[in-house]
Length: 516
Image 1 (cartoon, rainbow, N blue to C red):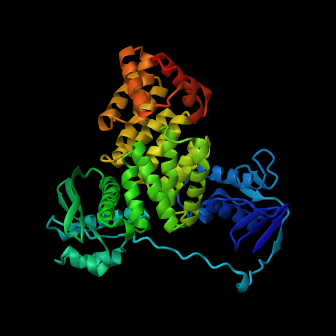
Image 2: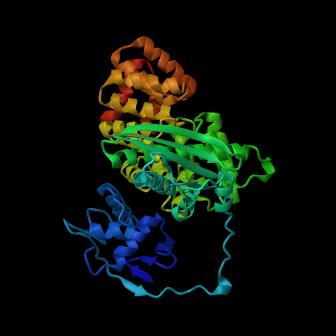
Image 3: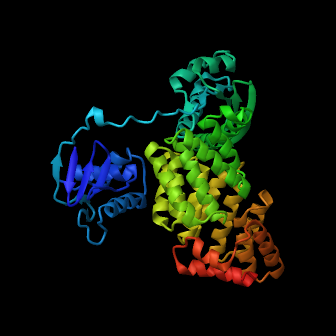
C-alpha cells in the first residue's frame, strides 16, 4: 500500500519515503513507526500499542520512544511544537492527523527490474550449549542446571555474530557420554559450551567451559561459588557472566583461525575477525589496519551488517581519540551504521555503532536512545554499556554514567576495553568534582593500558583542579605523546558536551594543568 500526504509518498511495499520525488533516509524502526501511525490514523495510538507493534513488547525507555517520534516528525518536516502531521495526545498517545490518500503500489515490470547483487554469506561459526551436568546426586536438582544452560543459550542467541543451536537439539545429549567432536559434527558447530552444577545446602558451585570442537582444546573455563540466598538472582548473575565471557573468546579463536589462512583465501568473515583483533587493541596503527580490513570485507559483501557496524564504530573511536577528523569520517560512518541497522535492526552492534555516530555528532538524545536499544537487544553487551556511560557523562548525568561504567566492568572483567571503562568512570567523578576518585580511576585505567588518551585527559584535568603540578605535567606529557594534536581548541570544538558548564569545567582543568 502507498500513502500520499502533502508532498510525501510513503510506500509500504518498497519501504520508502519520498518528498517531492526525492528519497528521505529513514531508520527501519522509524519507518515502521511512521507507517503504523499513518495506517492507524483514524484512532489515537497508545504508547503500549507502539511498543507492542514496533518493539515486540520489549521494555524501552520514554526517551527511546520520543527519539523515534521526533525522527519521524523531522523526516516529514514536522516538529514537536507545530505537530502538523504527528500530534501528541496528552496522556493518551499519538495520532497522524494529515490528510492521506491511499493507492495500490504499482508493481515494477519484471523486464525493468534490476537484478539484485548476490548475497555473500559469511561463514558464521555455530555454538551449542549442552545441558549442564547435575553433580549433586539428587535428580530433583536437574532443573537448576537445565535453567542455567537454557539462560546461557538464550543470552548467546542475542549476539547475532554466530549461530546458536536450539535447545531441542543440544539437550538430546543430556546424560549421554558423547565426545564433543561427535556432537559438533552432528550439530554442525565449531564451539561447545558445557558445564556442571553442584548444590549443597545453601551453596552452589557452577563450572563452565568453552571448547573448540575442531581442535579439542579448551578456550575458556571458569568456576563460580555462590550462596543461594536468591536462586534466580544467582542464576541471572552467573548466566550474564558466562555469556559476556564467551563472545570475546569466540572472536579471539576465530581471529586466530583467520590469521592462519593465506591472504588470498580470506572471506568477509575472516576479514572481520582480523579487523576485530586490531579494533580491540586501540592504537592508532591498529585503528588504520582495522579500517582497511573492514573496507575489504564490505567490498566483498556490501550488505554485511556486522562489518558495517564495526567500520562505523571504528571511525568514531578514531574521532574521539583524536586520530581522525570528524568532518571527514562522520558521513561515511553514519552511512555504514544506517546500512547495518537496515541489514538487521535486531543486531545490538548496529545500534551501538549508530549511537556512536550520533554521540560524536552532538545528537546525545539520539545516541542514548540507540545505546538503550542495543542493551535492550543484548543486556550483556559490555561495549554498548561503556558507550552509554560515555554519552551519559557528556549529557550531564555523571552519576548515571559512573553506574553504567561500573556495569560494563562487571559484565566483562577481562574486557579489552576495561581501561576505557575506568577512564569513563574517572571522567564522571571529575564532573562531580570528586577529583581524588577521578585520579585513582585514571591511574587504574593507565595501569591496564598506558597509551590511552582518555585516561591521561582525566588525570591531567583532575591534577590541574587539585593543584598537583607535578602530576599534571606528567599527564600532559603522556597525553601529548598519545595525542600530539591535543589543544584547548580541539577539546572545545570536538567533544560533544550537552551544556556549556561541563565544557568550561573541563577546559579550566586543562588550563590549570598547563595546556595552552
